[in-house]
Length: 399
Image 1: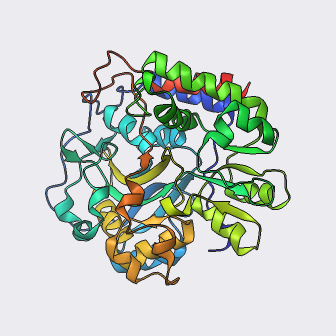
Image 2: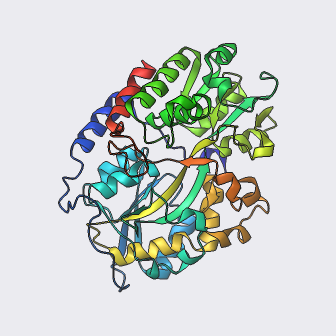
């Protein structure tokens, strides 16, 4: 994949993003088709394509290389709107102008709760049968025991450092989250710029402060949440860069502005290819630190107001066709969702590098979820801290 073509997920501008998020979340559940969860019924059978499909996606998920062949095969013209954040995706979906979206886990529950998406009839998506089993029936893509989307791909948020500057190689997030350790790299720490990063602190605290009794890093009681926020406020003076674009983080590590921080596998392999002295460890645990890591698993969801549902179903099946899913994964820099895609990658060891077929690797990854005020049945707690409070806290953390 070309470095200049990498689809970086840009984090929101703080002021604009905060206002937008607060407004859209305040209106959660007020869509025209509001049922308090899920938009309606699944499509009973596949009909003739409507001639077009209107998508919202992360940059790099809908490219001519695979969208043009789709148009030729189905007669469905692809109209795509790239979004920079999950919050933008939610806002766009609520306009009713789009047929589907490539939602990350920190958006999918909001779309379900707002009645903005419909359940998916997986029988109409033949390629779904060979999607990796551990991507099916997950809390971020399945609601009320129904699948609300088709898995697209996944990745992990990992720890990376400059081997010349960080010795010995760390095996824990403590190198950037333990205030005593982080002081050594003051001004050189690189951190992902998004409120969901609060969950990374929760993952660390889950391992190091068991008295907090953190289970799910996205379902935090007020005490647990405050502990995570306080930890990140302690980290703040040590952070040199809150990154939102992969290319900028690559440049920062290459020129020495950053020496250690959170990253995606894409940046690591790009820097490694440029002969930069970077490492991501511990290798024995597949690049996931001792405490585990957060990550993403993206899902194609169909709008409850889709005007082109047949074309949308055709797209969902197409994007997880083995060769197509391999193309997308290599272009974007993530593990494919389709188990048969690994036989189609241009790079022979791509799936090995991205742990696509390694369930033990993914067992240690906490996929993004939407933090909801209702803790759900998985916890014994009364209430959890909802997403608007995560947004507000992130603003206070960064100052």
